[in-house]
Structures are given as C-alpha cells and as structure tokens.
Image (tube, rainbow, N blue to C red; front, side, top):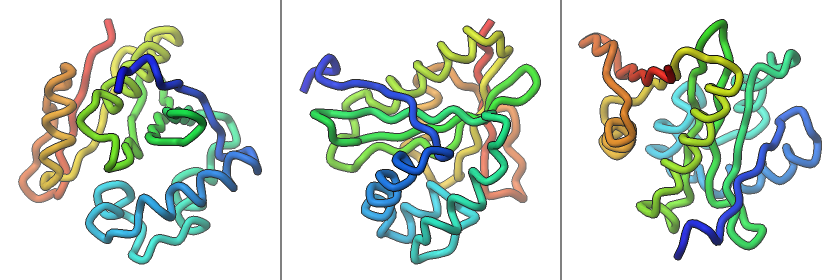
Length: 164
C-alpha cells in the first residue's frame, strides 16, 4: 500500500459530527485493556468514550488541541492529537489501527504535527510514552526524538524534538 493512497485531515472534538464518528472508531480500537492503557492511561477499562472525552478534551474551548486523522478510502486508520502550550506542543493519543501498523502512518501523522508546530513557531514537541510501549519508543527515536526525562519512579519516559 502506497502512502499516496491516504489522506490526512483535521478533526475537532468540539464538533458533534466528528465526536460521533470518533466514538465508533475509538470504541473499536480500544477493546483491549493493554491498548487502552498505552493510549489513555488515565481511563479505566472498559473504554468509556464520554469519560475519555471529558478527561482529555473538555478544556479545549480555546482550541489549544489540534487533532489529525489519517484515512484510506474514507476509513479512519489513524489518529493523533497535540496540545499547544507557550512555545511547545505535547503529542498525545497517537494510534494507528493494528491492521495498518508498520507502514509509516505514525511517522506521517507525527511529521504533519511537527510541520504545524513550525508554522506556528513552536520551539519543540514533547511526548510521554509508557516505558513498556517499546514500539512507540522506537518510532519516536527513529524520527529524531530524544529522551529528556527518564525518572525511575514513573511509568513514563518523556521525549522531545527540537523544531528549530
């Protein structure tokens, strides 16, 4: 499958239509407790979309969160969000449908977020990754993210990529 067959679009969890579509998608993707823990560690199993939405997106009244999806033939196969702070962005909720993993889609979504960050003059992008999520750690290392916080008492590593 060539990457050219895919399209990246912005969505908003403030939009009723987008919320409705993403509820179906995320409920399908997050049926496994391990997957849910990597994707949304503060949400308990079984996945509850409304609680998840309230926890992660309820405070986005100032549109500080940008969310992108990647589609193939109108089917959503990936998702990423970034919250914008003063001078930097924080990636969260990067997820690729298991049937489409290892095809570069995570890199593609992350690159699009980085390009957006440069456009709005962010200095860097950070991401927190569960220490057990070896696949995500390798992905972010591969695309230039460096560890900047590896506290032994936490369950997460923090990685960072300078944009300038």
